[in-house]
Length: 281
Image (cartoon, rainbow, N blue to C red):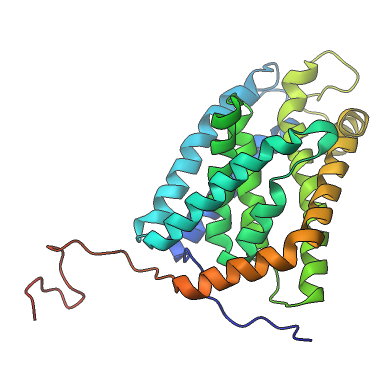
């Protein structure tokens, strides 16, 4: 049984600037999620439950900058086509679960896609799939930027998992699916916590309180309201990855080998050649 992975070129190569942009976007996103645990009494956010909406309005700009930076070096048309196909499939199958009791049928595809086509592809796939799904189901709202960023991180991290093959890879992806399902839900709970409860309940965040005390209130809030849904989301990922993972991974890898993705931008007829001359040779 083979347990190591032969190299497959990523569909979207991450240049240093792209990696930095993703790192900064991740940091900005985490701050948008975690601010209730860290805000001080003197902060303008301390008495404003609309802060998640304001911060959420900035996340689309952050995501747009990252997507522009990723695509600046040029995207292989075959990678764009594959991205469109998987995003459309993800947007179409997401309503099958519709989040009922936590059943989400889209994240396993983000994980398998990011695993095969690389971290950059997984990041873009997560963002575009959730965006397309929201348009398809009419689920556009202030929560969408948080969902797009969370799904993008799920796809990104799937592409950074250790190179394995066979049963160890499947077990690793299933374990990651369980953890990713719970963490994704926990981050979304954080974005909902401030304006969902307001400022005057026993489980509301208190600006300036120690992180441990605010974290305790959030954990109680999360366990009593959404942990069951988050756990079912993770279990759904495990089941779908175990059942469909071998076939989908083989199919996607066969497509990747046939596509032989290029990370060099296609040049227009009048653009200069690599040697700096546009004159035909």
